[in-house]
Image (cartoon, rainbow, N blue to C red; front, side):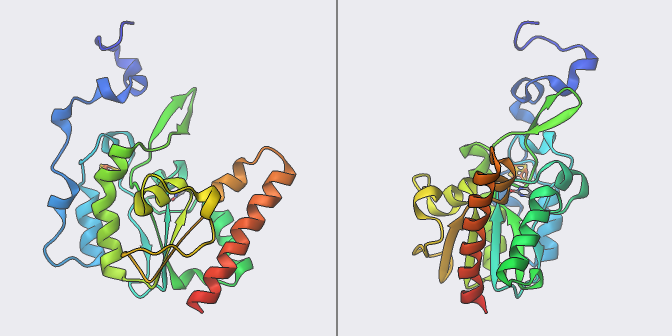
Amino acid sequence: MRPGCAAPLVGTLVVPISFAMPNGELGPPAAELLPPHPTLPSLRVAAAGCRACPLWKRGTQTVFGEGSEHAKAIFVGEEPGDEEDRGGRPFIGPAGKLLDRVLADAGIERAKIYVTNAVKHFKWIPRGKRRIHERPNRAEIDACRPWLDAEIALVRPPLIVCLGATAAKSLLGPDFRVTHRRGQLVPSPLARYVMATVHPSAVLRAPDDEARHAAREQLTADLRGVAALIG
Ligand code: URA
Ligand code: SF4
């Protein structure tokens, strides 16, 4: 089939999104959906209707952040995965389970933190019956940023932890390199402390046991630093 021509009905799910969704199906920018005096529950409701970037159509639902308004730290991931997309909650799939184990190893109670993502819809491409994760691009990260900013503004935690490159680039700039600066406290107007570390899915994706062990050790060591900061 030529690109851009009408797809047969059975192919609806595999049509590249740029063809499946003309720009006319985009809604107003996220910033225009923010309630005037937001609370976490009212933000969640507003974000559920967001159509500010093409990903709204690909994911099942907006996966908003979760945790206490009084959290000592916000942990920012990349985007919801397959399980998060179905369940509607961040970090409940394999990466989230690993994050829970590493948090426990580092002595951080999940109740003390707020977890969210840089992008709030799951971006995926079909491969057979499976939905394969795709990284969000710069435009999608920027389109979703008002939600993240609003979460940060409400929780106002002393510490923000970027899990992986997408969160770090969203919050610390496109030139930030997690490989060079993981575990360091980075000056930022966003919070007293901002740190980036490896994403738990980097541990899961490691090619062999040695690499997996090393990635997990890095993550655990950085989170011990976090534990020392938030007590
Ligand atoms: N990976 C992320 O970055 N976020 C999630 O919520 C789950 C997996
Ligand atoms: Fe809105 Fe973010 Fe979803 Fe894009 S990914 S539609 S900006 S909530």
